[in-house]
Length: 186
Image (cartoon, rainbow, N blue to C red; front, side, top):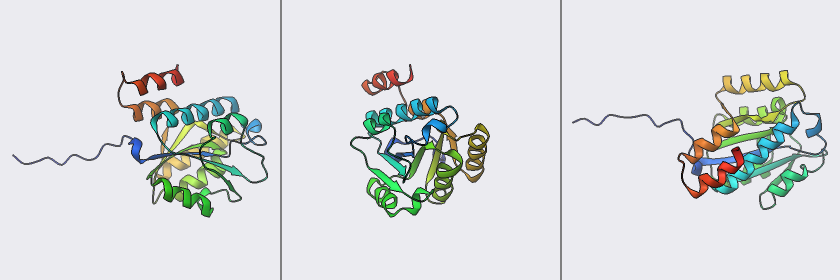
């Protein structure tokens, strides 16, 4: 009997993922449309990634102050990278951190969707799988956020949600990890 070749599923593999939290900073977050929801979903992603053992990278745009205190608290033991470029890849520190974590799928969250998140996604796409978490990215206007998500999708990024990411990585119920993660989505 001939073996049938089955394409690899498009599901996320936890051992291939890294979460990139972009510029969730004190001076920037308050002007983002729906900023409270964006922040809550960023925090849920960070907490889940700690549970699942997925590396987290946090960036801060210079001169916009530190990350909001909730993100700083969640990022206590993860690399935080200062940058001047909108595109994270133009920072040598970012490239070095990515080499260290050795992951091929970037899960992007943060602000602003149409500037730093989009430029990072578009630059990454030829070499990385990119998933932009729609409910964990924001811009000053809803239009800019929506246009950024459309552009990233057109370029080949996968648009996902916080819960979709969490359940896709979990893959099954009934585990201790599932029980811990369930507290994040309830």
